[in-house]
Length: 206
Image (cartoon, rainbow, N blue to C red; front, top):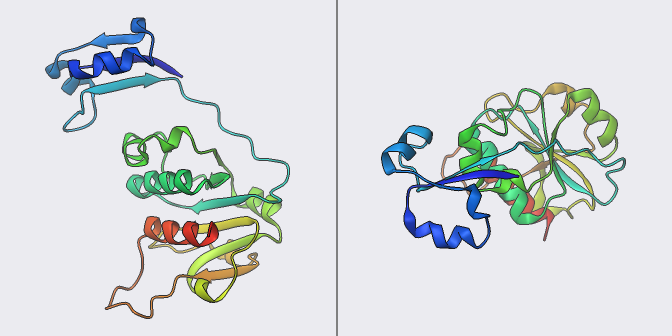
């Protein structure tokens, strides 16, 4: 919920008054905006919001399409993946306990608002195995070419930290390992995890 909105660009005043009660709007100078914002070049609007409650996972993942993010520690990557999940309408994004904080300001900036729309929760490996039994997939270079197989109707696709790879405990429990083909690569060793998320989500939702 939006509690207050600070504005240093007066052009936004009339627009925001149509959607936010005037008592929640506060005009500040550009200098004050620079002091309260964590961005090097603030856009002229800053909202103070109460944190939403963490979403509860459904009792069953039947018919659901979800991402599980294993040790994603780069805030830009996490924010971009949330934006991708929002765009393709994934049902849930589950984070391992060692992922970067979803409310890190760089995550929020990269998500472009998607962090407040996409359902997310944190779940350890034991919990993941419990809900994903028989419907767990991993995206990894050593898997099956996604262009040669049909997307699963439901399940959880695990995306991992680029340098660490998927946890061995997860790899031993998955139904199938999926791969984005790199046979036409000019020499790149791997894809950025957010780029991989976009390709997989587009394939899954096709």
